[in-house]
Length: 189
Image (cartoon, rainbow, N blue to C red; front, side):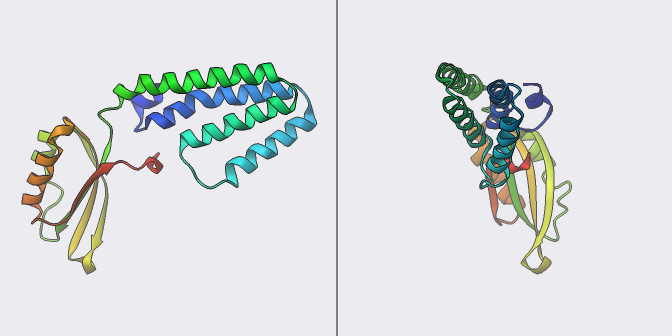
């Protein structure tokens, strides 16, 4: 949870940070000093992680969990596999229910297109103060052959019910050009 307080993150990444040590510990406990099996497991982990299609953190922890369960059952540790399944299910469901309310005010990505004549560094400051609890410009890109700027912000809205009012006031300032407000991409981590 310390990582979530210090850095921008998602509940899924925090779940991965909590669950991954349990998966690794179970795998290491199953190999228990067998050098050949340890090297094979290390190779399989490498293949699973680096040869798989890029996926979300919660999908990756599910893959590693399935890997550990498969290792336990193939080694004949059916009891350990059953207990591990139950512990991981409780951990995943428990973490999901605990973090559901804690992440209602999540980071959103705001993209605003403005004409090149607009001083974008200060134009929207009063609106950000009114509607957001935090905001940070994360990118500026020229579009339409340099006649427009696309500004990208990381914002946390004070009240998610005010998002339409926020967008309407932004539209009045940017000459009714394109504005997009959505969930901040997870690959920003």
